[in-house]
Length: 281
Ligand SMILES: Nc1nc2c(ncn2[C@@H]2O[C@H](COP(=O)(O)OP(=O)(O)OP(=O)(O)O)[C@@H](O)[C@H]2O)c(=O)[nH]1
Ligand SMILES: [Mg+2]
Image 1: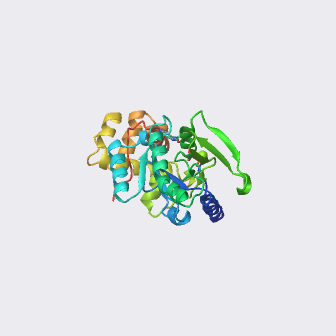
Image 2: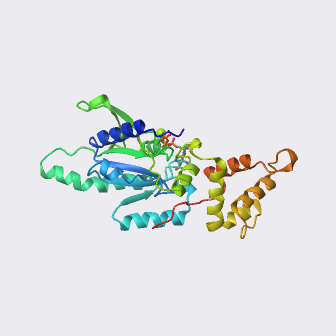
Image 3: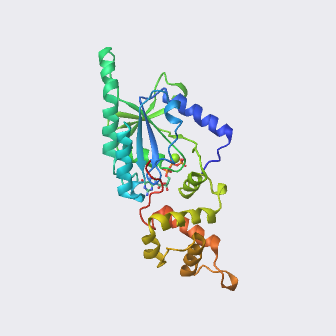
């Protein structure tokens, strides 16, 4: 369910993330590996003040593996910690836990120096709608997790979940508002079901998807629909897909609305293959 980001919702989300950030040592921003830039919120570092951020490229199973590898490399070169993850299988969770420990190390050392007790690192998860925040929490926590209950001294009784004895996770992830800077980014976010269905027409989204496929993965349209895309307009490809699938209305014309919906669903489920929408740089 996508949230409609009325200004009031945004203010509340901002406030919650800002407040929760004061309770944790590390913030994990969940991104969609198919669009790691478009699903990131550039306001986050400022919002969580100086807290270190670990970026998790989730749904890596649906993204082009080579593109994901390059994004992780690119982020690392910028001095950011980024890890690819598949929350459905848990692939990547060991690396995430290691990154939490590595990030916490200097903070723990600072505590030791002040002769303060070193407690487990506290972590919160944030991300735009539908990127897999809840799935990520479940993947990380597994079955061994125990809710540690509301900690005394912490306002409003927030719940913490203990992960394998040495990490404490805030049990409710923070929903971030997507930042939409361009028409194209909006279309990507609609395709990924991050922004609401009402913001865009299915046909617009499907035409955008077809343009991306035509430019970057034309073999996908050949393999699945036996369509040779060079020289065709996106609208023509949509017509051909509808014809191939037999989505016709009375009079034999193509049901473009239905064709568009099916294409979007196929993309979201990964049926079209591993596709990354964002480009590096
Ligand atoms: N293929 C794949 N699907 C995933 C992955 N992580 C989550 N999903 C799916 O993505 C959808 C959204 O996942 P959630 O965990 O509910 O996402 P969320 O960020 O908590 O969503 P909201 O609470 O609505 O903001 C669900 O259908 C999940 O099954 C992943 O790593 N790979
Ligand atoms: Mg959720």
